[in-house]
Image (cartoon, rainbow, N blue to C red; front, side):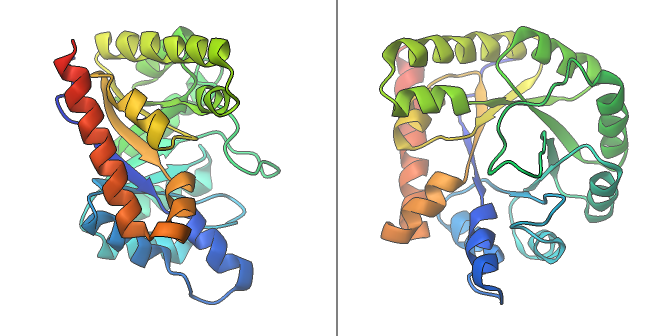
Length: 255
């Protein structure tokens, strides 16, 4: 697969719903946040409908599908309930993620290698409904190869360990983790898979990874919603869009 001359930004609006649900009612509305993000330059919207509905709820997904003008990426566990909802709503894409009720956020990548049979069936059902499927996996060759065997056309590399090492100032660990991401992006790209990345990204780490020509899309949520408290969602998404575009141009020019 050829390298990507541009890079897409998917904005995850889960934590707008987290704030709403902390008090109840309708404010702030994650659908309004999605519309603001799109107007500011987001190429798509990501929303994770968890089994316990801790942030995004079913009505949010229905309204997003009806109202937003860019693709909806439906994050979901590989369960019959979520497959049924996805096939009914028919978002543009579905990203299958691991899910634990006790976790605060998605703690790691999906074990595609260990769940091939289950995931092959899930991917097949979603594909039959016209939904483009990605698997949220660690930057490991076995997981990438399993994704290809399962039949997912897209992978999303979990960047959390790298971002945590960068934030901690651990130069050795961050260099090792980033090298894994680079190798994995090239490996997946060579196998014909589209490569996305996400989890824990901020302006600095997004700029670094956006320079990789194999990466087609970044999905970013918590950082953007947090920064929006201080600077507003429109301004923050515009800044992230500019950071990514600049990094992709510079990265491409330097190769």
